[in-house]
Length: 434
Image: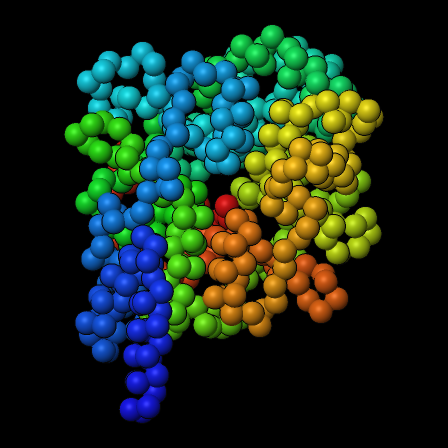
């Protein structure tokens, strides 16, 4: 026993000497709190207590210490460019008509995200009154659906459920070239299509809120990111994303609290959460818009592309990949039908030509149930991806593990923890994946 304790102390000393990043220093703070927890507490209870004791203001800011924002009169086209340029999934929208001394609630209209842009694009691709929708009718001219109305309260993203199948015009390369060249697209402002986005304006934390609150919002309450506001300035001072939390965990490898949790195998933690039969996928010969439609209907961030008639994945399409239909429509102009397979091929060639990369476009990153959670975290963080697929020995998909799944295994929500926190702001979480 004494030898084991000395081994842990030596391991911690080596880890501590090599931990200079802000995230690692935060991990050492958790380690100090871990050491003084009551011995009768379970590891999960210890972690909950540690994270409840650390204010969210301690979370490191992004490398450039700058929160990206856009004005409400920014065009949708420019918003897509900004998100692609900064490699972000969403961005806060500042109301240009708000007074200078406005509170943060009045200063921001909400958050624009790729998920909302997908909803908007899908609406443009549908038929109107039996004819192809080539006039690109603005979203604001249609009544807000109940699903979008619920999303406007700030928690669940809208689920798009189109009644009509895609017609030939809407799945050809000409459709996207016509859309991006249209005056409607060039002039559409983010505030004009607010029904497609998560507008509340949004749920935000104060600097004094705890780490535990933030982690629960990113997991149990399905938020991709959590803004932290400075009440005095009335502005967002930091945005904490699921990816940033995973990076923090990776930087904490070697610390006792992390190793006690991260060295467990996936199956020991009940991962993946989803049964193989429930994995959402798209066949290679289906229209690429079907992939985005499935993402919106199922509330997920990506789908694997599988071989026709088989179960093996040949690629992956994520929600942010909608940018390639808007920023580089010329690469599809010769495609009569943009299938999931042709999308992967066209985007792959485009990225190679421009010496860029996009996670998972032509590769599917997999693991097995016998991998440790630590292994998975390392792979997700190093590759800057948001999900990893669990495959069997034959390469068939048996599940998916998302960033949210991992965070949900780190902490749990104590009974009555949030109290009236959400009253008048957000609905309770629904059972769906993000």
